[in-house]
Each structure stands twice: as C-alpha cells, then as structure tokens.
Image (cartoon, rainbow, N blue to C red; front, side, top):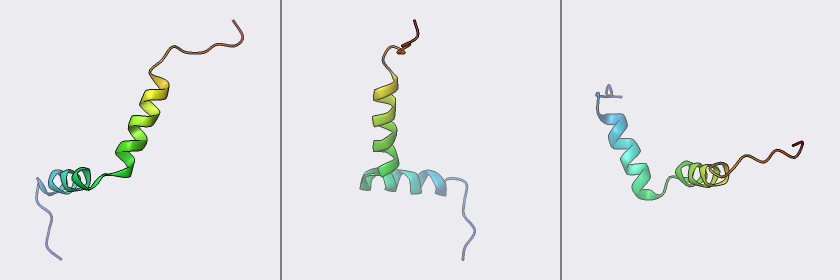
Length: 43
C-alpha cells in the first residue's frame, strides 16, 4: 500500500461529496434544526 500524500485526504473528501456523502446531509439536517431560537420551557 502506498503512502498517502498531503492532498490525498482532500481529494478523497471531494470524491465523497460528489457521490453524496450521508454525513453531509445529516450535518445540514442538524444545523437546520439547531439554528433557530433556543426553546426554554422553564422560562
């Protein structure tokens, strides 16, 4: 197995993004739900 270069991780992440990385869609979902006002039921 060849040693990975400095930019190989960026290339791999870009390839995952092009294919539809499921972690990116989860990140968008979570950020969308937490970007609103904070709910404080005790106030």
